[in-house]
Length: 145
Image (spheres, helix red, strand yellow):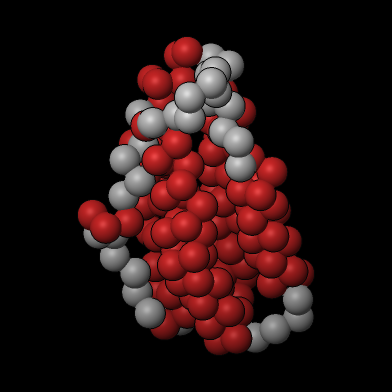
């Protein structure tokens, strides 16, 4: 299923939203390879790029959480770790092209509906309105918006 970026997916944190848009774009590219005559090597390369994109996004998001003193950092980072483990497991598994694409498509859709709508929304709300008494480690973190 092809995914489209819509305003209801926005967190209001520009850098995070830009990464989410790229993740959707990569997801759609993988589906394109699935539907086309692309061979398994092209798909594996796209999946490797996709894994890198997720890892980079999660690293940036985790650094941001540290900068703003986000109190739910551990739980949020654990969700990232789980996603990376699943992507790596799919990458390493012996499977055919169709099965691999279906698993990735389902995983990204699940991530968008659970992680983005849950954990990322809570992060965005905190970033915009921190709890009283929680100091930002880096006052420049606001520039991330």
